[in-house]
Amino acid sequence: MKQEAFFGRPIPHPQAVALFSRGLDSILAVKILQRQGIAVQGILFMTPFFNAGIRERENDFITAVNRDYDIPLCVVDISEEFLELLQAPAHGYGKNFNPCIDCKLLMVRKARDYAAQWGAAFIVTGEVLGQRPFSQRRDTMRIIERDSGTTGILLRPLSARLLPETIPEQEGLVKREELFDFSGRGRKPQMELAARLGISSFPSPAGGCLLTDPAYARRLKTIYADCRDSHHPALREVEMLKYGRFYHLPPASFLIVGRKQAENKRLLQLAGDEDVIMRLAAMPGPIGILCGTEDKMKTAAARVVQHSKGKNLDEVLISWSRGSRSGTFKHVRSKDS
Image (cartoon, rainbow, N blue to C red; front, side, top):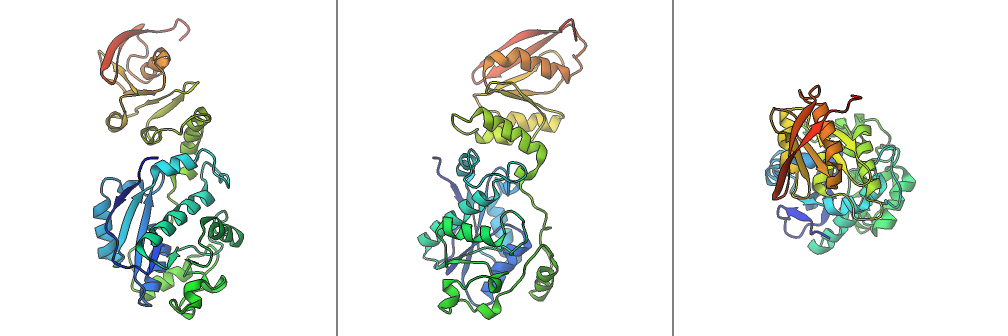
């Protein structure tokens, strides 16, 4: 398995490791403990589906969080592990292709491992009991503790007084009376606490996981079905699914056709040597990226031409390249089209 990419430098001797999601709840969870004098190290996990917007500017983001909230942060890219998890999550999917429970389990396990590595005593999350119907029910929260090996050391400061005491509370490291009893989907208690703590700027509470988007989820589910008996899709492939028009070319192939110049540019950046890059040889038009076998090139060419000014021509010359190889061929319009 590919080694995860790690950005930032942890503070010396943190007492707790906090899952940082960029949202208000995770900010509040850290600030509550910092007010008790506890040294908290934030950690943000990144995949193609959430927190992907900070990719290639991770260190700038770390600096901004430290400046704006006085929260020390590290960023860890867990894309490879997450792509593998998506093949068969033990606790299933949500409404679309979102494995919410297994996602949280993966992140808590990783946080536990880093806590052990850094000598931290417990793990912190910004979860609120009952806020999310799938992953923040009382029974689900117990499952996450049990299956991640963090029973007794997973502290949720915003709802702690509605939950069993954790070891750091029992041992006096954390003052339970200074924790909270928030529950449900309402945001008013968090907003009031933010005002008391002087936090006036924070991201909106919207979800933000691409796997909950029905259109994207359908695309991803389709290519995972093609990979059912083999390795998971490549990172570049799941990134390409965010753009253009998608055509499934079974078995085990798909085509992305750019819709505008910016998408064409991005698709070319993402394409690897394994992919077939297709375009109209004699006129401007969309870029097509064929991920799969070359025997689908003629079918793919018809789709590319369909979205170009050449769609009414009897013949259109197509140029293609795959790694160091390249060539041209004619697409001939069907008499029925």
